[in-house]
Image 1: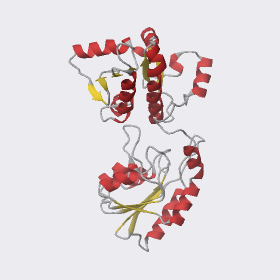
Image 2: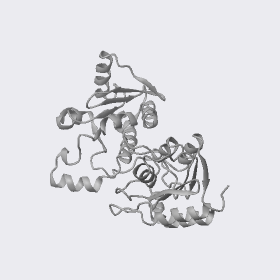
Image 3: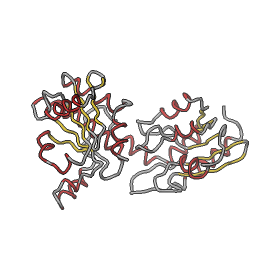
Image 4: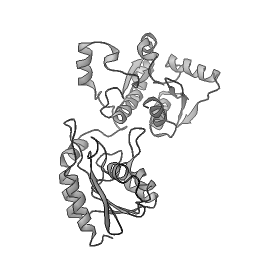
Length: 325
């Protein structure tokens, strides 16, 4: 239930959001956050206020109020707090819960479908009381962010449907046209996804490879080399620049991908056993660079292993944490 004094703080959060800094020419969110405790404003912040791209809640809680006791306070934020960030960053919803904030009043749901609704559920699960802006104020926030919402809603949903076309295509075309070297499109943090060369791998496993590539590219955001590239087993074996330097995921069973077979045998010799991933299995060799095998008895099982790996606690997040530090 909203109180009479909520209106003033909501209006202040909306006004604060107008000062959000934008970067790189792409549609970005306008976000403002105001923190109130014992009827006193402790601080306010907008997106990118302290550093370009920085979330408003982070700037407020860590940049401005890092050493203050904010337990039991009420946070007014124009956007649902995020639940996912590129490692090692911590999502805003986790920061809010860890600071023991008592209540959060939210202007609109995050239009990013990876987050939409999950921020509210996370806060409620951690016993943070959640309210929403009244309808008229919510409409103001949505209008403030109409360009970002329109851009986000025009994108395909993650994991479902066909894999996205390489989002780096235009940049890759320019770089390769100038240099035609793998170094122009890949760095030490680039994840190579290896597909086999049988008809099964080309027809079926490549789809699963595309799902992986899309998710890794999303988590890498605009970083030029925190991304994924799909290569054949043959290319992997003959291109020593990245085989010696880059982390990699081999998709498909040993029958369809001999790199999977080789890495599985090496892991077994070291006493490393695969773990279940849906209908398939995962294998993680935590070395530098890291090696992963995602496989199943059948192609559908390998695809299910990939889908499970993307959200599994011992899955993609673990690999990226070891490779993107």
